[in-house]
Length: 201
Image 1 (cartoon, rainbow, N blue to C red):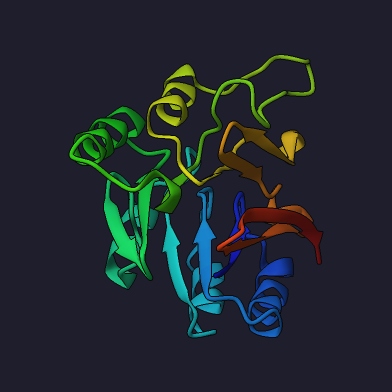
Image 2: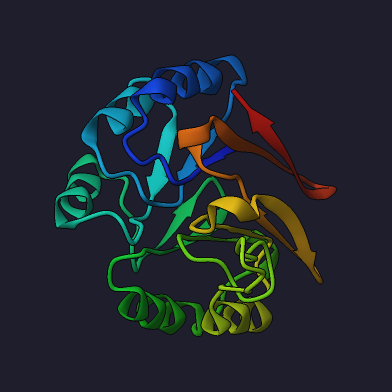
């Protein structure tokens, strides 16, 4: 499966049509959006590609964006869903703690760890979370989540300057970097595992 990961769109009209072109050109199976969308237009551009999309809100999104994601059938804040043999758990920037509680209740019932994808706006502490001032601003709760459930993939954003790919045991942790600067990621999942590349428009 080929996934295109984007985050921190921040109403970027400059790049929304270009990322839609890349989605089609790269022939991806799934688009995951890790929040801070802020406007309707980028979503419409992406949805017009016809590729399956799932998204969570970011801390800069408001309830209008939350409702819009639900209306489009792509919002997974606080949800655990199945897609093409994989389990996707969403943790948005709106109601973070409530989201976390909801998904852990579901995950506690059992899930295949090598089929689990976590889509979160916020980073886990210590992974792709270093700010310009040198502070690790990721959340300890999300690091604990990774340690407990050992997902195949943890996709996030939020810290613009901490674009990167990390690995913690069997989990690949990806911060594509903000689409508002033309950044995105390509993630490939196969029988051999998962790998990611950081791309730029």
